[in-house]
Length: 278
Length: 289
Image (cartoon, rainbow over all chains, first blue to last red; front, side, top):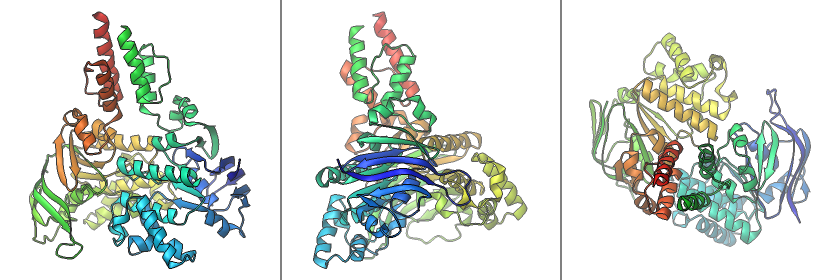
């Protein structure tokens, strides 16, 4: 089993802040795995993304990306392995047209022109933006912009993709499309995905979830295991899937339900059985 | 202050090769004191529509009446300052618009530009800061020292300080965590009730639209395809799905369960509470039989 990302005992403190943003954080991500990091605003999630890409330097601890220890000398090599998609695509645009924008990263890597054209087209097709080649990025709507930002990352063919709340501005359909694209990349190309999010659909897509609170990892497990914590998650300021919430309310109200009901279908089925028995 | 759209059309970059029709056939009335949610896909014209609410964009056809002002398509309207004071827009990620040295100066910027004295502006800054749930000591801080959620509240306070009669919110909770989302949405609901503010909310969240709005407007490809109360809108699940829109999870649940058991849940199921009550009534009734 290959390890794509290994974080060991990492601590970090922002200047002029009394509390540590991260305190002795350790976790790993396997190659080809989808890890979701959840936690409320200020829990340290986004700090992790910045440390992994070397935008910030850890005060203490060790980070290894695809077997390369992250330090000042390896930082450029490490960045070649990672593509990051941020929350707000407006801060990520440099090109005057959509295709120029996707080309930017490729130009910096010295990719030959012919291959570049091919990769741009392929990447934009993957995010359903192939008919926007000549459009100006700043005139696109929010969701379209984010899809272009994702295309820019895909074109570079990184081994790891970090989504830092990357779907929070998309509409439901746009979000589904983007997540489907990422899922496909994960499966086809063994790309490792780290998604930092509040979105329950992104949590459900994960192979494994870690929960952050006050700069520490407080829970780790599969989505089912994490959602089973119920109220504890709500105390951390996180939402629960609707089915979990309604199931709990029904039980409190005396409905003799047995399961935990992570999905609406599961809850509907048990209520149906109950209804028939009466 | 009622807002009336009559047959509004908007084309971006009209009469150029880039011309694009973003809105057409918009007829809409937003009554004083109402809470209207505008729903639709990315690119459906929601944001274009809301920029007409204070004349940031002007119709290329038709007319928009906002209180006593009417902006007619094709005619360039000037002196829109009074209008912009009455209609405050909170854009997506409003914290990106913060720029001053201190929170107080930032909140005062709007009112001072509208001719309010510095003293009065400071008084308003204090008042609005407490409205958005931030402590007074934040006033002297730099807005950039605050957390994302706090910055957003400051930006919202800056809009409230202009004392608008209509508050337009473009996805005000995007990117916030669930707790922050709920706090901000409850705050707007409170302002709506206490100050009789008219609210126009542009959102992707069906849950928020169902919970907070009195009226929902659904947009698709540049025009309004449906209008009604949340009860009316969400009673027709199939047509929403045809538009590729989500329905609130509670409504989807109702739909699924009803089709299984072949009996209606006696509730509109717009919230978890309503769903719970509906199920209790249904099961109690079945038991009696």
